[in-house]
Structures are given as structure tokens and as C-alpha cells.
Amino acid sequence: MTGLDWEPGQACRNWTAQYSDSETVAKKIREKFHDFFLKQRDLHFYMGMHSQWPHWMIIGVYYPPNDLWPWYLSFQDGSCQAS
Image (cartoon, rainbow, N blue to C red; front, side, top):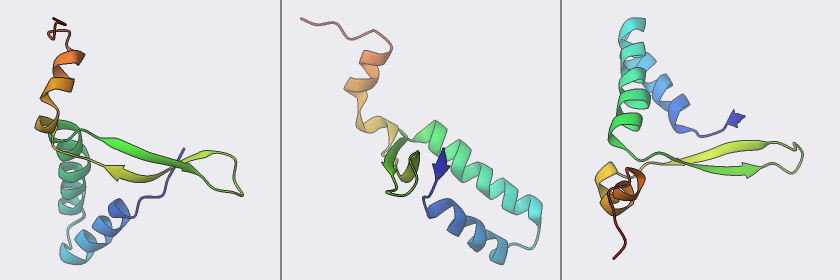
């Protein structure tokens, strides 16, 4: 699967220009695209296909805060009971 979202590439370019140390750049990437997205956000992908290539691509990312959908999260852990 191919990811075509512009945000990771631009963030990497900005941090590389801002910080000369590659360890700091790697830390920033890890903080944003691992810790932030996976621990604090509800990550969704916009998927699409290009007319010339017959495979799915990630064309965008939507990441609302995790606490936006407390009723949905309660269904996931099985604690929500129908009345």
C-alpha cells in the first residue's frame, strides 16, 4: 500500500532544516507519528485509487481526539449494554 499524505514528508523536511542532529529529528518523528497518533488520537485513513494504478493508496489521514467518541469506545470494550 502506498501512502500519499503530504504531512509526514513536510514534517520531516521542516525538522531536518530546524535540527541539525538526526537523533532529534528521529525523536520528533517518533513523538508525532507514533506516540501522538497512536496514543492520543483516533486514526482514520482516507483511501482511494488512481485511475492508472489498480491498487489502494492512503491519500489522507483524519485524526480526531480519542475522547470525541466515548460512546463508540464503550462499544469496543463490551461495557455498553443495550436497554
